Amino acid sequence: MATQAVQFEKPRFRTLDLVYVAVGAALIAVCSWISIPMTVPFTLQTFAVFFLMAALGGKRGTAAVLVYILLGAVGLPVFAGFSGGIGVLLGSTGGYIFGFLLLGLVYLLMTKLFGEKLPVVIAALVIGLAVCYAFGTAWFMFVYTKANGAVGLGTVLGWCVFPFIIPDLVKLSLALVIARRIAPILNHNS
Image (tube, rainbow, N blue to C red; front, top):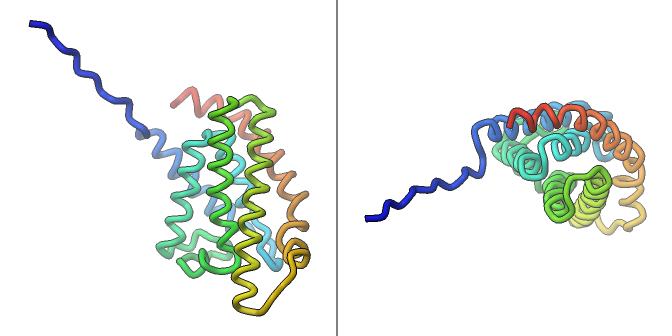
């Protein structure tokens, strides 16, 4: 009689991965509280998202963003200005918050297809940021128009995108420098 070896499937997320995701969601929350008031708050959320993608990888980084959004959706004050709740997600800035998830998905897809070499990581983050801007801007225009009347694309870009391009690219650069130093430690332990 032949014996059949029992094979266990490799778990999708190990305990350490879950810890990284939880700490990542907390990091995004803390960075969202560091805010410079403007029409759309200037926060360090994008820094945290860039850092998590580069340091934890697309799978864990995107999961951290999803957990962050879910924590905010249930009312925990994890969003900018210590706010939370479904109202924030459905408000004018909610599209940018959901855009972080799209950024993560773009990063995950690009790094799965092309590897995690520095040029691919940079391109994935920049393209992901562009997708985040596009989705957030469309969302902002929809919500703003519904509440206040029509507004032009140029006006919305002037409020929500143009002032943030250079700061976001600086945050991306800093996040990459820090993540490149920390990622080997995280990956060694995982």
